[in-house]
Image 1 (cartoon, rainbow, N blue to C red):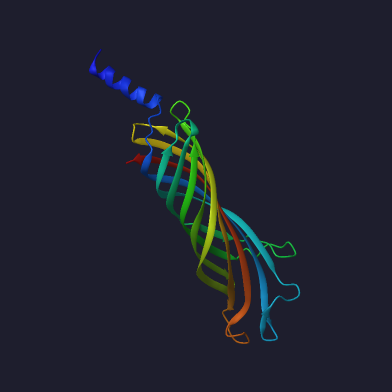
Image 2: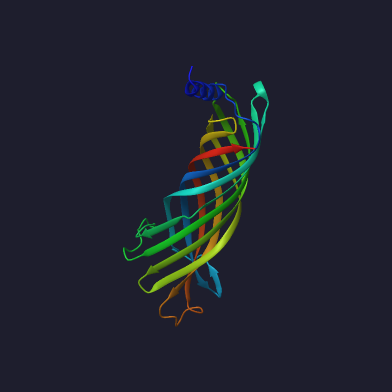
Length: 248
C-alpha cells in the first residue's frame, strides 16, 4: 500500500467518524443578507402652536428589500456530550449597509401614489453584537444544529426627500435589542477544522423618528418648517451564512 493511499484513507476515516473536537473556536464567515424594511409615515402640521395630526392628514407606507454580501465573525465554545449531543455558546459580530432608492413609491390615505417627481433615498445601516446558544447532534460525522439568541443592534439611518420645492434630510441612530433563530449544518474537514452553513432570521426591531419638511420659500412657515412626518420603521433580516470553524 502506497503512502498516498494511507494518507487518503486516514483523512476519509477522520471525516467519517466525525472527529470535530470540542473546545474554544473562532469562525470567520460571509453572509448573503436580505434586509426587509416596512415603513409607515403620518403627516403632522402646526395647529395652535403645536405639531398635531390634522383632518385629512397624509399617510404613507412603503416596503422594500436590500440584498448584500456581508462579513461575519464569531467566537465560541462547544461541549461535546457524546450521545447527548453538542451544546455551544457563541458570540458574534456583523454589519450590513442597507441602501434603498425610492422613486414614486408609497401611498397616501386615499390610495394615491406620490408624484413621479418624488425622489427618496433612505439607508438603514445595521451593526449587531449577538450571543447565541447552539445545540447539535452528530450523524455519521455531520452535525445538524439549531441556534437562537439575543443581540444589541445599532441602526444608523438617513432619510432624504425632494419633491418640487419641498424637502427633508434627516439622520440619526437607534439602539435596539434584537433576537434571532437559525438552523444549520457543520461538516468536519480535519480534527480541528470544519465547514458550516446556516440559515438565520433576525428581528432587528423598530426605528421611530420625525422628518421636518421644509419649503424652498421659508416665509409664512414655522421657522422654515412646513410640516412634520413621523415615521415608524420595522426591520427584519434573512441570511444564508457560510463559514469555516477553527477549534483550539
